[in-house]
Image (cartoon, rainbow, N blue to C red; front, side, top):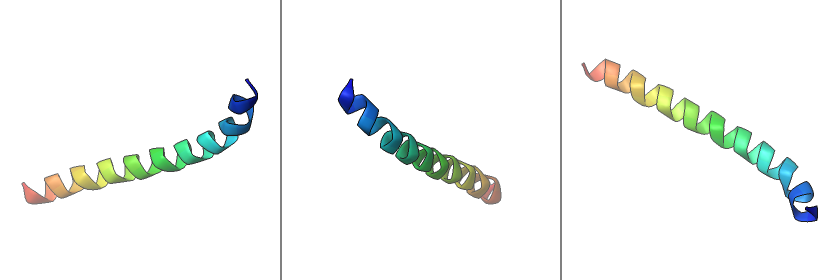
Length: 37
C-alpha cells in the first residue's frame, strides 16, 4: 500500500510520457507507411 502511494505519481508521469512517445511513434510509422505507398 505504502509503496503504491509513493510509486503511483512517478508511474503516472512516466506512463503518460511513454504513452505520448508510443502514440507519436505509431502516428509517425503510419505516416511513413502512407508515404511509401
